[in-house]
Amino acid sequence: MKNITSVILSLLLFVSCELFEDSTDQKNSNIEYPTIIYPLSETEICKLQLELYSLLNSEYLAALDEYGFIRSNWKINRGSSSISDENIAISQAKATINTFSQFTNITDTSILIVKEATNQSGTPFFSDWIISFENQSYDNIEVLSTEIMIIITDNIIQIIGHHYPDIVIPDHDLISLEDAEESVIGLELTYYGYADIDTFVVDENSIHVDNASEETTMKILPFEVDENIELRVCWRIPIFMGSIYPDFYIFIDTVSGDMITYKTLFIC
Image (tube, rainbow, N blue to C red; front, top):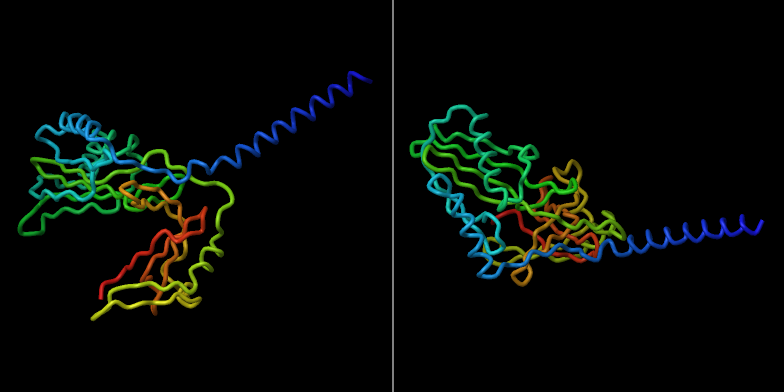
């Protein structure tokens, strides 16, 4: 009987330890959030530039940003292309992305979704291809501002844009969609009007609109803070000023509930 009691006590101790460890892991699972991308040192950038140049030769055009990624604000190189088949152009674009995988963070081009494949042959100045791919999806959440664009000519192929590696996704104690929407009621959004700076105060009617073209969704927002990039998992709340199309996006952090930023979607 004594032996049986000892076995039961041992099992209970094991189970309680496992539960404690799981609980600890759960508590610590958000500690590394948000993912922060830091700018590289001059030495690190120079090293990466040399590696990039070894790939460029005279066939490709690309440039790095201060984080070591293919930059997205590079001058577009235009020209002519003899390619007439869209599938060939897309395959060539994917091959280019694969060549620069170290700097685009894309090792599997099968995950890429073509957003647009346009042949400029009908224009008077260019006959090149512009292939763009949808934003990155990480853990089934869209990562904003991660579109990849490839310009293909007979002489050179240009690559613009990148994805992000290893993003921390918080998994507990998250702000609900309903609480996020409730938190923005009463916020005063500033925008440039026709003659001066105007403001718009968010109310219930500007969040919930019949037949709205968009609803609140979870997005990953690359947000620049003190020269670093924080990859914030946010509720992106569309705000409507009188139509079914959003005029603002408000970004609410899913962990803190803080407003990270808001964006104006129109120009007066």
